[in-house]
Length: 273
Image 1 (cartoon, helix red, strand yellow):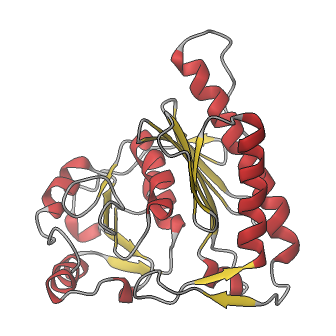
Image 2 (cartoon, helix red, strand yellow; image 1 turned 90 degrees about the vertical axis):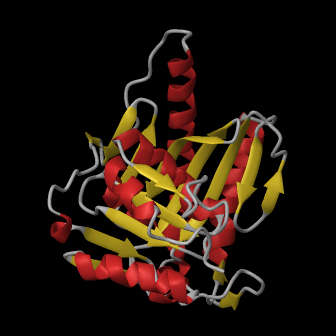
């Protein structure tokens, strides 16, 4: 599914190699997830992961284990940050970010709207991202070469009319503070509608031009950094509410239009405390 690989020795050739490997990791995750979907496997409730219910399944752990093993064999000097098995060698120039199942609640409920996230940081900056749906076969990816949805090059939207904005958020309960809830409600009142339950696919569809704004809180870096790489490649922008890297303080504001992002980021408090 990856774009044609170049044969030159330019930095872009390295990105092609890394992007091809990111697809391989997503394929490995699929092989772990598919047999366990709707299998009624046991679930565990995590603790200490924020204010919302957090779940983990055998599929989460198996998918991440396969990806980490492949990284260790192919790029042993690279770092790895994963939701289920923690961090390794994060001072490396290149660090892989893994969320084996983003949207575990959807997975447990038998809904094929979760995704596997694979990202690559270069000196701390997201450069490559993949969002894969193991059951439907949908895949979104982005790199310096551009952004693609199922092999079709995509770009973000630039809505001329704010009243036509489509806004996405995973759960209303993500936002905790009164000031942040008020800011989000003002945005929701202006928008055409708000779509909940999107998880990683909110970022994917923003990059593809179907969603205009994503607002989230109570998230971790692996929830958003792969999506940030895709959004940037498609022409959009994602940050924390204070304008720093998304996930740095648990918050995200992403928009397909950089001008819209600049206008909205000033509406939200710096944090959701």
